Image (cartoon, rainbow, N blue to C red; front, side):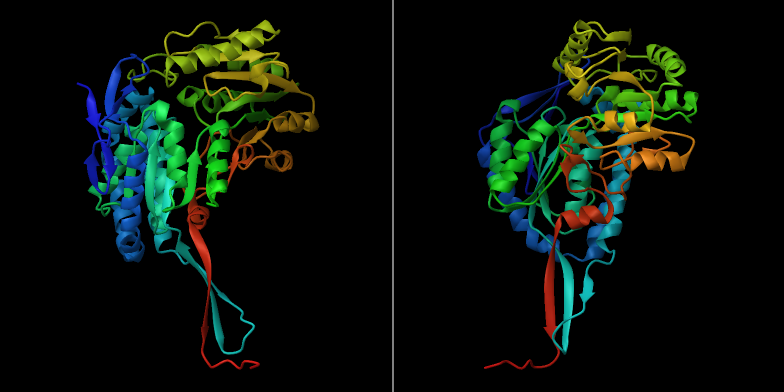
Length: 486
């Protein structure tokens, strides 16, 4: 039976004002999985109005009460792990391990946000005026417009709202058209069941054709005071431009063209296992996925042989099968896009070591290439699929140059058995995140998460998330009457 869901506005499930709906398709079967309300601009205004009306009371609510709600939501989410696994398999083709990872990390993000609610914030200043107390305090901004993507839907849906809510803001969340349930309505359900007051979180779902209009209307709404967006660099540029036009601060976590660097002192077997995880987890549909494996020349032959054999043996196909490692991409069009990148590289002289060829529906085979050069589309484009390129390097200088040869700067993994060596290399690579002794994929709720260059700006996570969604206010208290010149 097809699931039917409406918009979530003011604590109620309501249809779009126009009565329109849109389909949410299972990427593996190609069949409709859910039907959701297709919001219009008038629904955006309704959601912003509800969030604005709820702001004063939510910001004034006892921090301990806000913390209790977030902690309860974390527990409820973990209780629903099996429901989430089924939902993610049908909505985005997520494998069972990936779904359970989403639940665990998202629950910890809620707990970290809860801890931040009652953590010390602000500073006592040294005043110039005698008899004055100076303070720098953090205050909520108001209504936050949040945009959540489909690829890690529960993690990124929760991340889009947890810190803003903890800081005392209210939120209008625009869910991805590819995962309106998992990255939007599920999050609202959990928080509502945990006791979140009506209007504090509102969720908009929409037809893909209306996405640009909906996003622009949401950012432009005068009640919205800040924006956060996770998604592609191309769309992020548009979101950032809208926010700047309306003088609204934004946190943008965008695409990556990430490298996993295997230094000459690496353990090859560990490097093979690490790289396989960093490239092919969630079929490569993670902003942190390793598109490029850079291997020291002394290890290149051994690494390539072992890595290719491991990748060729990865089970692919049905995400509901517990043995599946490489599930489908989010839709057949995405699989065709990845196949086109591979075909372009091959036509220009690259070699496929395993995989390649035409996809089956939304399933693209795990693919490893070598000999990819700057004239090929895959050299610069984010693959966002189960594809990587193995390239050799002769020394650290060449490895650093290759890793930095991209407009993006999200993350990097450096595989080494010598932490000092790894740190020397890491400090020369321009990314917001680097993992020494590990591959490129990693996320922790208390850590500052975000990129450099075209991978965006601002940080989610820990105290950095609270700072991103609050404003610093200077407050003075005169303890005696001042003397004025006239």
